[in-house]
Image (cartoon, rainbow, N blue to C red; front, side, top):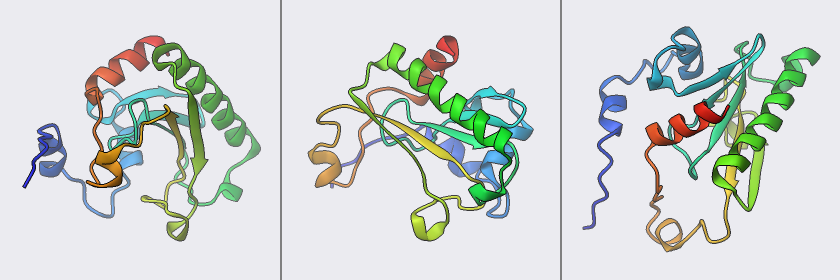
Amino acid sequence: MNRIWSPWRMKYIQNNPSPDECPFCAALGNPGTADHFMLHKTEKAFVILNRYPYTTGHLLILPVAHKENMTDLDSGTRGEIMELINHALEVLDQIYHPEGYNVGLNMGEAAGAGIPKHLHWHIVPRWVGDTNYMTSVGEVRVLPEALEDTYKKIISAW
C-alpha cells in the first residue's frame, strides 16, 4: 500500500466543527486567524482559499449572507461577487500564470455542492496536464505547494 502524508490535515480532524456549523460562517466569525485562509472581505462578499483544493490557488467566493440559492441574493451582492471573481482571476494570473480556469457554482446538493446551505463560487486555476495518472488512476490529488504558502502569495498580491 502506498501512503501520501498530509500532516496538515490533523489540525482540521481534531478541530472539526459540528455538522450544524457552517465552516464559511465560522471563517467570517473569526477572520483574523490564518486557519480560515480568509483573503478578502467586502460588505457583502468574501474570498477564502479552498481547504481541499483541486489545484494550487483554488479559491472560493461567497456572499456574507448565509444563503443557499442565488435568487435570494440582492443585485448588490451579486455584483460584488462578480467583481471579486474578476479580481481573483487577475491575482491568480499574476502569481501562477495558469493556462485556463474553471469558474463555477454548484447550487444544491444534487448539483454537487459539498456545503449546499452557503453559496460559494469556485475559481480553479488550470494547466494542461494538471489531471495526471495520480488523479485518474490512484484517485489521489498531488498539490505542489502547501496551503500556507499559497495563502501568503495570494494575500500579498491581493
